[in-house]
Image 1 (cartoon, rainbow, N blue to C red):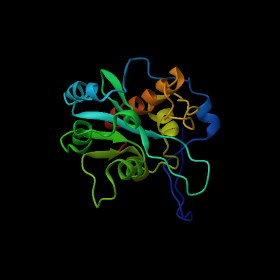
Image 2 (tube, rainbow, N blue to C red):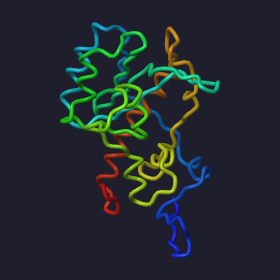
Image 3 (cartoon, one colour):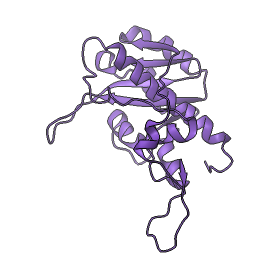
Length: 206
C-alpha cells in the first residue's frame, strides 16, 4: 500500500492508493468457517433467529449476470455473515420472505457491505432512505482511498487477496457449485472483517 503525498495542484487528492500488482502480492484467502445454504422457505425463520443475536453483520447480494444491453435479472442470493457463520439465502427459490425482509430493514442491526445502494434498490425498491446500512465504500472515500473496491480494501486492511472469479456466474442454477458457495460466503465475511479492522485503525474516520 502506498501513502501518497497530496499536491494542491492536483484536482484529485488521495491518501491511499494501491496497484493491481501490489494486490496480487498478497496471499489468496477465502472464508473457511461454517456456511449455511438456505434453499427452502421453511428454513429461513430459524436462520434469521440466529442472525438476530448479532448487532453487526456482513451483507452482500448476487444476481445472474446480464450480457445484453437492457437485460436485468433480480437478486438471486442474499449473503449474511456473522462472526459464527455465513448464511446464503437463495431467494430465487424461496422468495424474499417477511422474516428475511424484516431482518434486512431492521435499523437495530447494522448491515455492512460495499456498493449497498444498488443492492437495496433491487431488494426493497426505490426509496428515499435505507436505514441500518453501513457502506465501506463511503468510509473509504471519506478517508481518501483512490481504489475503494473490496479487493483493494481487503489488501489494505487485512493483508489478503480475495478472488472475484465466480462473480460472473449463474446464480440461478439448480445447485450452486462449491466454488460459488465459497465465493459468496467470502464476499459477506470479508466486509465484516474489513469493518472490524477499520474500527481499530487510528487513522480511519468512520
